[in-house]
Length: 373
Length: 264
Image 1 (cartoon, each protein chain N blue to C red):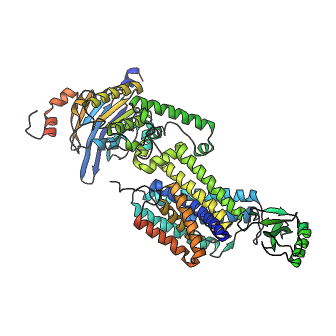
Image 2 (image 1 turned 45 degrees about the horizontal axis):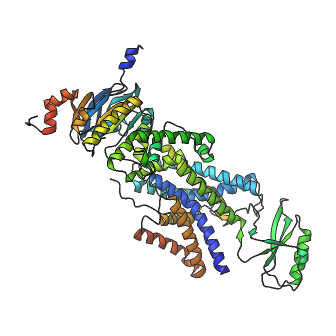
């Protein structure tokens, strides 16, 4: 049961990551009926912008360091804005001139843009993986503090007991470390307890022992949930309650009629690209960087394709659909990985894609769209 | 400029506007001058090029030849949204409402060019935006009231009856505060009493909003009772122009409508 709960939690985290990428996919499709295959590259681009902000401006050493929340916020903002602007540029140069050339032509252009960024990325920063700085210390919740003095050798730990302590890193900053004193249900080992006491005594910041239940969630994952929550709420308000959103919806229903109502459709399309890529960019930092911890120019390929599957599953063009599809896909993947075979994970996703396209192309929450005459 | 020249400057002028699609000349040297406050009719058999004229005036199509000016300003190089912003609003022959949106929202879309709002401000829900939004809501409701469909404000627009959808299109067009309103077959699909109501309604909005109206219509009694002047198109060519009485008697018009040799 605890295993299942952990898998479910991991699945929801993965789903949240897919969701943050899928909303951009689905918004762009909703408005100009383009499947922007370069969207995964926006995610990659965002991760790299975040990386360079952290290692460059905040001078995080290559092997890590935790500059903290302020640096994270700066990295997220920079990644979001830079990625958004890149997307606006891509739309202007690669998609807008093809708007009347047919959907297949624009789709091919999108594929080209995707490959272009993958290869230009490899040229510009190299094809090797880079370790993404942890940025914020990892903390798992829920937890309760236990006084170190109260622990005795041979005592059976009810829950996992871990010591959080700090050492001076090379750059002079305090770096957080964690060791396990005892796992839940085991007796406390004397030597391990002695080591913990020594580490606590030499810790550069106050050390603490915490008891953790079997099912915990990392603060980094909580950040992803928080981001998804904020993004969903902001998009809801934007789309349903503002004039920009109303114009977006009008353009998505009837491009030409919206234009004749005085809506500057080019501005709406640019804005949509910006918003979708902004979200993908911050997701690149939160997920690609801080959760998967390593980045490379091809990192956007798989998450991009998975987000596409999620968007199709939920009904492409629908924002709630993309969120639902992404969460379902994330959980299914983790379940298959846990109970069937990790090798089948990707096969499952693309199997879902084929199945949805065959059986219900409009997806779970999409509406059927007959060809316009 | 003296008062009289201001009065006589046409609000919308098309001069020798020609549009070809491949080998087909859809509109051939079309000219019209709309004086402020006029209601002018554009009639002709199916395929005569009437809707193409609307598409040219609103910038959906760019003319191959000729010039279109709105209040003296050349609109040739402007995009449809800019032209709409300058004061030309229209309805569509085959209704083009924003189907998934509610009746009220459709009208609100029409306010787009009139009131400006930044994305950032909208996200932050600045008080000013909220107030503007309330203002839009009030004005949109007033327009629905005028069109007699205010009680349907929260209905999905696609679910409305045909005549109601046409009225909603007019409300949406009026939301843009146009100077010139182009109505494409507003009376299509209405019965006799409805079309009499619609006539009265069109006169009323012309007065209330100080509009100049160009309308395409097949329903002859409807047009004749409404307009001061008529233009008749056939195969893209303007074959007659004048008062309803003149046009009705014009042999070329009779021929175009009823075929050669027919009696009026």
